[in-house]
Image (cartoon, rainbow, N blue to C red; front, side):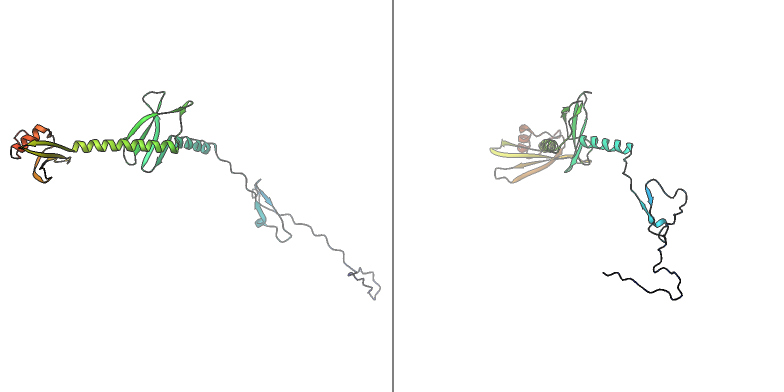
Length: 227
């Protein structure tokens, strides 16, 4: 056995105890100011010397989202379902002229007027939400509209025709310069070898027809006063 008993007694015959009875230590109550603790805090006393305000452990309560914030989040979700923006394009579902129908408009970023407005599908009592596949199809459709407009504009600004005059075949072109302050046109004639023979400035409203082109060539590449 590791425990050893002692037989040493005091010489004066007093009845001293061989070991002292341990004193019972009492925890000292922590005195905190009124209002220092909340229901979400607990005061823990580590010992007689550690009972102070630093021994407080705060218990975090669950985060409660205010009702207004939840409503705002729901509204943002609905708004996201009715709009889509990517790759320089934006789509937005709107009420059409018919109060009971919906439409979707496509815009290029930075432009105020829509490029495309088409009817949109219904889903129950409201419009069907936008998705990535539908947005991609709308972008392709709107891009095709821009290409057609560009081709039409190019056809309006640049015209070309072939006529026969003076026993030769000529190619005549008209290029309209849509200058804001000085709009005008450039009339040009090419011979059978493709070389430019003549070039003349005309009004922006000049109409290039086979008769006008033939008269210009036969008149030694001069236009009358009214042209």
